Amino acid sequence: MNKRLVNIIFGISLSVLILLSVLTFDRLSTFKNYTNIVDNSNQILLSISNLKSGFNTAIAEQRSYLITKDTTYYNNFQYEKSALRQTLQQFKKLSRGNKVHESYAKKLEETADNRIQSLLVEIINDTATTKYKYVQNDLIKSNEEINKTYYELLETINKHERQLLRRRLRMKEFQEELTPFLLFILSLAILGIISYSFVLISRELKEREKATELLKENIENLNRSNKDLEQYAYVASHDLQEPLRKIRMFGDKLIKDYGDKLDEEALNMLERMDASSERMTNLINDLLSLSKLNDEQPKLEEVKLNEVVSEVLISLEDKIENIEIDIGELPVISAVKGQMFQLFQNIIGNALKFRKQRNDSYIRIRAYEKTMYEGDSAFEYTHIVIKDNGQGFDPQYKEKMFTIFGRLEKTADISGTGIGLSICSRIMQNHGGMIDAEGKINGGAEFHLYFPK
Amino acid sequence: MIPTILIAEDDPDDQFLMRSAFKDIAFDCKLEFVKDGEELSQYLKEKELPDIILMDLNMPKIDGREMLKILKSSELYAHLPVMVISTSTAEKEIKTAYREGAAAYIAKPADYDTLTELLRNLTSFFFKSVMLPKS
Image (cartoon, rainbow over all chains, first blue to last red; front, top):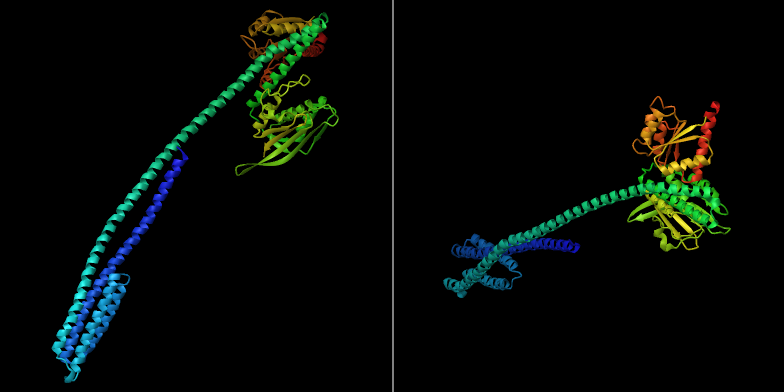
């Protein structure tokens, strides 16, 4: 499964989730809006009904006053009048923002003012002197027109508002039905996407598990065949030793017993044969020691490297001449002592073997601390450098140097099997460390050993 | 009386080399050869007991390891010095041989001079100290 698909799927589910939240929020605000609008309509209807009944009451109070002249009715009328004005203000407030309503409110205010005015005129007329007095009934009748206009206007507004309310209620209902449906569909979609990605991921995990299993199996097989190969190398070299030993012995014996009967050429050939078989013996011995390295379960102990190097120098004593050997302060490390001996013997032996015939040859051994980074984690190493100014090597063969039989140059005057450095590499591996080399042709060689701390 | 050295060695080449090495060190002795453990037992039963036994570890029929056990656990032969000669230099093999009562463990040398040197040293040690009172 590719990573892009996963990214796309998660992107989609994320956006759908965001859409869902936005939509939910939007739906809820719309809901609130519609509730407000419906509420507004209801309030308007209420104020219309208030305006209607308020007027009825005001007219009744006024009429009662005109008949009885009781000022209580007059006061009641005044009270109703201010109540009406309040209701009108309220209506104006409610209709704010709606053009039709605003115009209605304006008209209503005018008409209501007219009507109140007419009622007041009726009261004044009642108290006026006869000279100026209208016949009350005529006045009332003519005012009836204003009354009628007022009620008609109220009725129109009422009708309009009711229609509006009906429409608003219908829309609210529609929203109420649509919203849960929409949210449900979206949730279903998210559920689907998530299930699909779950299936994809679990399939991927299963495949990965299978791959890991396969890898493990392959590693096991590899280890087994490596072991077999090592075993094979051991047996082969062990069995090769036997006939070779005899070849060398018979050769020796031949030279010893018949040397004086052979001419110089024959002797020379025999000596060459002997040298070759000796080299082969060394090869086989090195191979054996290499395969023994693989076999051994190393016993770690505290090894004083200075001591090891001193022992190595003693063992190489007959090869040390006309060379300066400078050994610095070396640490004590946890290692297999025998292998450390072999390691330094091989490297110092190499340096002696490949030195140049000059007066300022040297081998220098120093120890440092080294921190290496692998990702974010730091690893501490003991870093040992063995440097010489001998023949060096061509850096392009660096990798080859550490492989079995990876000898770079077949030189007649230098003996060696070419296994030495691969033994060193194996020893470093056994200690969880690394070996590296730097060098130039005729520019000396530098070997780096890294022991983990 | 010249000493008898019994050599248990199945390889004819090695037999030849041993024989010539003994000749080269000019050590006056009687060399007897057997090819395997069975022949060795037969020899001990039928003939006079040798002064030393040189024995290879890897032999057909009854091998040297087995033979060493048999010899060292028998009343008749336990006193015979047995020197093991083998190509193996495995520490385990050497330790086992000594534990089973080998007088010496000799790794087969890789060149002829070493072989003669070795046999010279061994025989001189054994026969100077053991044989002298007899003569």
